Amino acid sequence: MKPQEAYEILRSNPAAALVDVRTQAEWNFVGIPDTRDLGNAMALVQWARYPDMAVNTNFVQELTDQLGGQIPDTLLFICRSGARSQNAAQMISQQMSQAGRDVRCINVAEGFEGDLDSKSQRGKLNGWKAGALPWRQT
Image 1 (cartoon, rainbow, N blue to C red):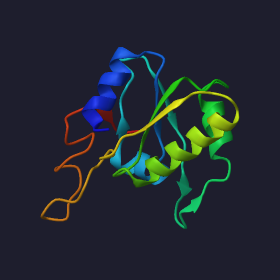
Image 2: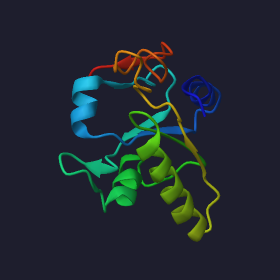
Image 3: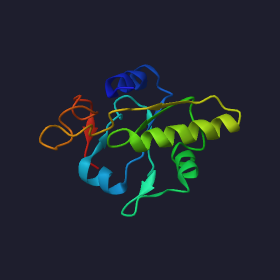
């Protein structure tokens, strides 16, 4: 799903939550989506830990904790350009299904920064930032 579509889901569904699965360094130096005006829950949970990018074995528990112990029926996952968030969305979907929960897990395909442009720069071609959606520095 494109970032603009994800933002519309957040705007129309106050129970939906956005999950940013990038690294702490990315949140600090690149910024994060800003959903404060919408009132949706947002979780910052690293899918992989910098610098070795090993998968976070505590991902499910950290996500659950950040969402106050309750996983909502709709989760939107975002990373830099859509790959890590796809993996996280699939894993949470499987875990919730095994637990008997029907949770809609959606990948924000272009991610926060999007693809590289012709000058090998992100954040200009597509993605959350390039779509002029709200974001902020942490």
